[in-house]
Image 1: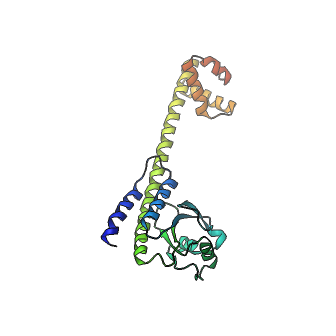
Image 2 (image 1 turned 45 degrees about the horizontal axis):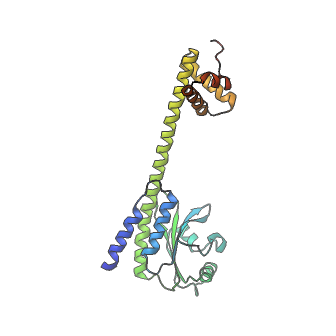
Image 3 (image 1 turned 60 degrees about the vertical axis):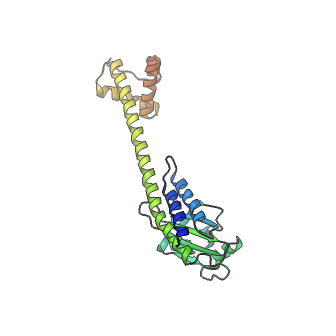
Length: 247
């Protein structure tokens, strides 16, 4: 790589690595392939495939992929990359004889050369990046070096994105759980005060109402807390058939 290509590539890698708040995992991957096409000379289309149930699924693409791998060839280059974690390259689809159906699909859409590389991930699904060009022999050694560097970088990006979104999901779940616990505690306290019962008695009333109305405990609790705020707790207690026999 020359000095003219290093700086633009470094800037592109920086943008590819950036994790955006509230961006879904698939959106992060999509942003990556968008930058990929812009960064690799001669690349006309790129897509990312994940290994799923013995086949593959395209989760991000810069255009319409020219084939569905499972329909084209069960042992085509994408499937081989996902299975063996080794790169595959088609120099010219017009004369390719290793994967004739795959090459025919490429040529039908006007693509002549192709390179598929495994994404070195640890946390994410098995993934492969496919780059297509309308020119034969387009992915020469220099272009291949750039693609290899970006693909190695992709593994870190995908893993970080997966970790980021897993962490966000965990925080969201914990926040929801804490909110639910707080609401249930408030409702339990209302029942203890209203029926002059202890902690176990308040929770038993809440659980009985949940079972009787076939509703989640947290939903019944939310109803009681809201009713208390509106001043119609007695009405909601009757609606939920909440009563203490020994009162």
